[in-house]
Image (cartoon, rainbow, N blue to C red; front, top):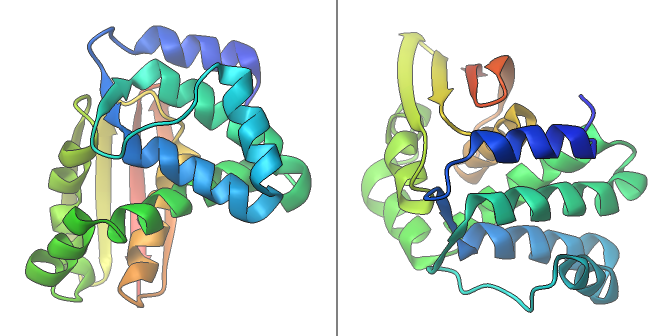
Length: 194
């Protein structure tokens, strides 16, 4: 997958003006850039976008998130080897950042119960806490195998693979996530775990 600017523009065109994401996901990317590349590199990315920062639970335009995601991916790619790996890592970072928040800790304690099925079944509701766009559904296909369907979300599927993988890691579960994109804003994810 190539994360070039024409693709960014196409994805931004898929987003509605009313589509928003919480600042926590912006800050997750910033935190990962600071950890991997240093504070100066992270500041350079935010300066390029003309912003000073985000408040975790405030809402910001989804198009701004896409811009940050692409800028962060491009900055991180040389260090990790490819844009594909970079965007996956940023997805994993988003999950770590979410689960370190008060909402994420509460979700883990009262809903997830340490079981992959509980985690994945609660994923659509967790997404709804963080973004106001798209529809998501988890279906258990058989023991230790499920599908996660996303419609109306212009964020690249590789990022969501990282999010789901990171969520499984949060409960010490090994799993694999593969996606099949149907369009720029819809994909199915096959999730296997042990």
